[in-house]
Image 1 (tube, rainbow, N blue to C red):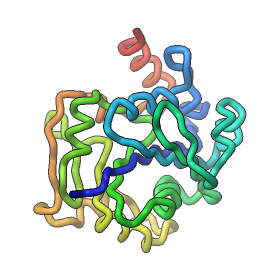
Image 2 (image 1 turned 135 degrees about the horizontal axis):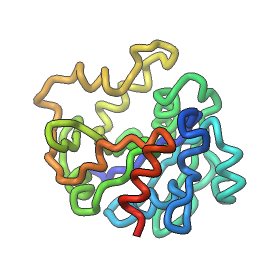
Image 3 (image 1 turned 90 degrees about the vertical axis):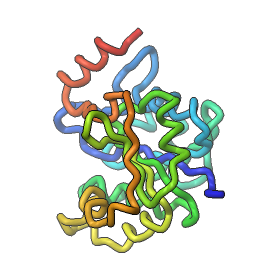
Image 4 (image 1 turned 180 degrees about the horizontal axis):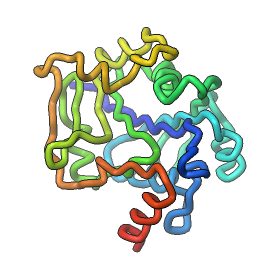
Length: 211
């Protein structure tokens, strides 16, 4: 039986278009990154790795337990969470992903989502968690989204790629994979395609989804 996968939440970018660290946007009396963690906690996931980079200090100032990078797991909302800091965030999001993956046991499958894509509903998230293949992609109306699930045999190969190479990208590596090693799961939750990159995106999402 496959080991219970872990979740990787990537929040190491500049957030230039948003003009503010996306994970620290306010959402229902909390921060967006904590909202994302809360959504993950409704599944069978027990460990979450958070990749930080450019705005590590801001995160640590707003959420004090984020100031314990790469040391021990912190328990939050019944999840064990480890903060991992990319010391070279200028190399891009792929380098942050590599930095996080190096902290994860090599026998673990991972689910990966950038901070600006909302976590989907629990039922369909659980289906992704339980699916088995080298790569599992959620699909809404013919378009693939996040979270992406990667078997350890696949993601270990990502560690050898040069992050300074513009071709070192997860989507390109997935495209190189033979179809039989990829499972596509149809979901009804369109948030897998959301990209909350700019203030207008955030405002539209917030108006639609705030209770």
